Length: 161
Ligand code: NI
Image (cartoon, rainbow, N blue to C red; front, top):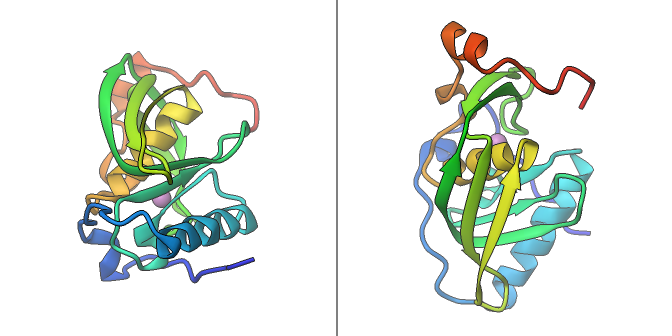
């Protein structure tokens, strides 16, 4: 287990832009493993490398169906919209409703350096957007839904998450 310290609140690193991964080496594999351990210990569904103080374009996500390791990820397609409550391990106690696409397709490299496509809806689409935003220094509090958006796209997730 490699647990790393999660950067929080007003830590200025959270607003910095992460750099592309060029080397797929042991150092990257250790980072990915540590990020997964850190995310699971904190009961999160996603974590970006910047949140553990590493300014590289690396994300891990698990919305309940296994770990996804996304390296140099980019959004290639979005569809629809949703307003749901969102939180962030770096911003404890600040959960709030965001405006996000309902369906998102991401292109990313895996740890072997191969490009893959990942499609997600609902929670997984939110996780893609949330974690990829981290790579550009954007936080979910920058994406809060307006009253009008909440009226137009009422929550589909009234049951507990
Ligand atoms: Ni976050």
